[in-house]
Image 1 (cartoon, rainbow, N blue to C red):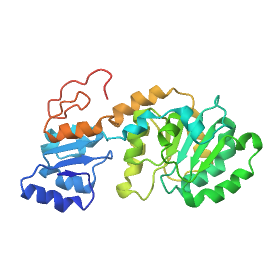
Image 2 (spheres, helix red, strand yellow; image 1 turned 45 degrees about the horizontal axis):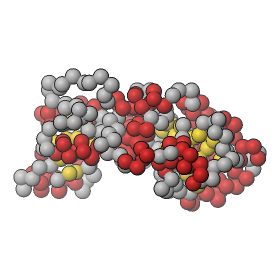
Image 3 (tube, rainbow, N blue to C red; image 1 turned 90 degrees about the vertical axis):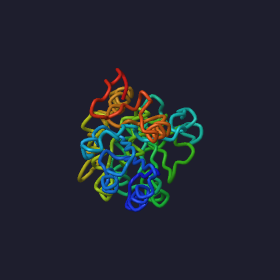
Image 4 (tube, rainbow, N blue to C red; image 1 turned 120 degrees about the vertical axis):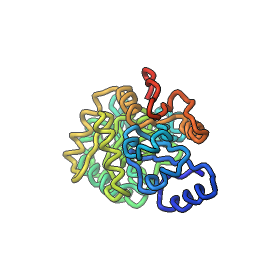
Length: 294
């Protein structure tokens, strides 16, 4: 049985133990959720996304833990910037400027939308902006965009939802402004994208704030915690445009193991051993980390 957290997994996990079936836990966030903490002693294998999760495990079960990272969608890694320009008709973009991708998830984020709206003229003077705002928020933001000077409005693309074009949009983006869910962190670190995270305050256990802070402390992102304003967004975005993406790839890979073959790693973990060189075992006597590996 594979359990990824949430209260519904606890009875199923306990049933697996009673029926003598192997139980594999996977923790996607940098902090262990309550369900996974409760089931840890029953697990055959415990897969975590970050080494920072290991001290949160009871010492008696750490020998069963392996840092596998989070599986990511393979197609995310196959994007092409030019395809995004053609698919979304971004012919008003200035390709000599960086591109900022703003997203609040499929439904959008009112908080992110409001802050970006207030900072929009400043952003567009320095970058192209693709803003995925959620279907319910398009009209209000379109009215705001209509008041922009012509030389700026051509560099602003507003969409309620970004679908199959997402890999290409991410390939085009130089900076991403987003929430800080586990899947987002894994994909952005795998792609080496500088990010400004605006955590969802109501996330369970405040996990998004922990995710964002963890990456920010390692220098792989900027976390905007508490009250977020247009001014704080400007202060965060400006410096991120000055560094090459490989800096964030290197740093992020050491903090959140954004596995490009995460599914394979989890299957290896289920077998009770970590044979993949990218999944360093975390037994009491771990093997040395290979140079250049995350």
